[in-house]
Structure formats: structure tokens, C-alpha cells
Image (cartoon, rainbow, N blue to C red; front, side, top):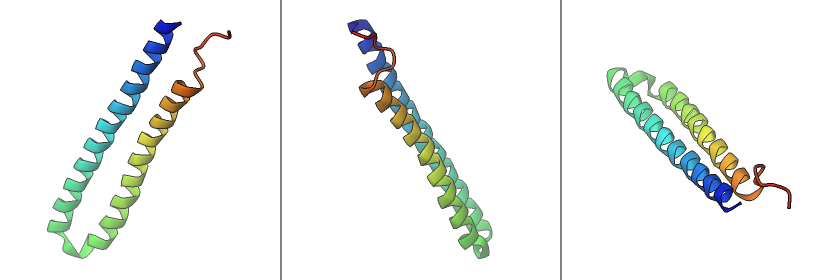
Length: 83
């Protein structure tokens, strides 16, 4: 039983950690491309900024779904045997 709980804790840490790394890299790349595009065509800044914020929300939503799954495994563990 302790082995299962330890592996679930490790899996939760990996889900949250890798999700955070992926989200931060994705938002950083998107922000850099936004700055490049707005420097090339300053008249499109408003449109690009709107699209950038929508995509940042979607990237964060994917990370938060991973956090919710990790919390599900941590508190309502489906792998735990019925006692």
C-alpha cells in the first residue's frame, strides 16, 4: 500500500512539474513571437495582443487541467484498493 501511495505522489509531482515547465516555455515562446511581430508591424498590435491573451489562457487551462488530475490522484486515489 505504501508503494502505491509513493508512486502516486511521484506521478502527481511529475504531472504538475512537467506541466508547469511546458506552460512556461510555451508562453515564453509565444511572448517572444508577439514582440517580434509587433516590432515588424506596429499597426497590428491590438489584434496580435488579443490573440496572444486568448492563447495564453488556453495554455494555462491545459496546465490547470493537469493540476486538477494530479489533485484527483492525490486525494481521491482511484488506484487505492478498497479497505
